[in-house]
Image (cartoon, rainbow, N blue to C red; front, top):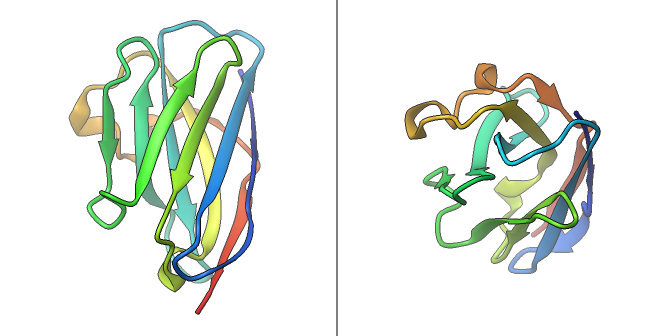
Length: 126
């Protein structure tokens, strides 16, 4: 499966952005898709994930209530709606996929995912 992330940009603190992750190739409902981010000098960290088949979601504590992950089955696309953005949300955002339905405890792990998109830059100015 190939993943194409898009939608990043420059936004003021308090603003909103919606990221998209379009999947192509061998796709079906038995995938878990996650969003991760990596700021300069920091490790890649989990943001949110969704299981395609049952829409089970998981969020990192630092984005709960501000970010929403969703999927559009006909478009094979996963979205990350980001609101109330903060300067600390500045990072390159990556979408990733795992073929299979990850259990909740493993949805946040980088090593759980074996397909990765190219990343999209999100910059929040304060």
